[in-house]
Image 1 (tube, helix red, strand yellow):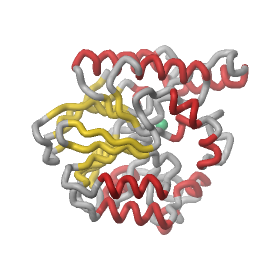
Image 2: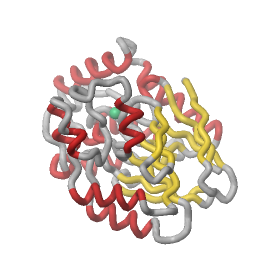
Image 3: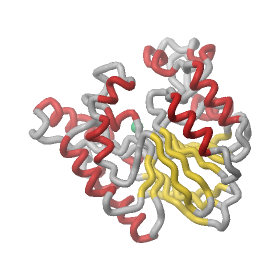
Image 4: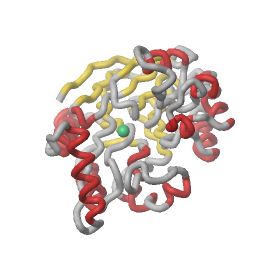
Length: 287
Ligand SMILES: [Fe+2]
């Protein structure tokens, strides 16, 4: 497994280290679901691993063993599973019970068959309770945890928008003086993050995969997936809030399946983890 060492200087009481992992996309399925799901699991696992499906649980187990050995909390930014299945949820529950994890949900946590439907709150409801139960000790929709005098806030922003209740709770979370680290699946739009992720790509075809990308940038692409990524008014307000809240000190995210570091328009760092299915994680020392 490849571990990238990162430092964030954000005003912690004393330095501590966390593991930041994302997007392992586990693909277990058996006939407790159905044959369609079994075949989906086989083809998705092969495509993530270049025909070496055993790597998916291999890397996940390595991550959890490392967390236990080091006694470090795992900040997990979503897409631990690729789709909802009895076997995937069972596996997640087993692993999450064995380490200290703080997690925000990804879009795939609620994906029933991957890309077969328009995914929104109604879609999410179909599997929400079962998925939530698979990640013990976490509310993967909204959660807070203080580690070393730093408040970590996990928000499920996996469909490129924020919900009013999440925003309200985040406002309250930021209302004292404690440094805050926002943990999300979908990175937040900023000029620098957009430029970093789109560098070398054709803007008429590629997608940025960021929450809050301005419409005029999404208008450039003919990719049908852009429809999903246009921000609503509340999401833009949330972004503005993030850029004007002095005790928000960093954002850590996943979703883009590549390691990248960028800054928000306010200048605070945004760290993105590579796809865990490739055996890459970040180890972040927070000072
Ligand atoms: Fe992913």
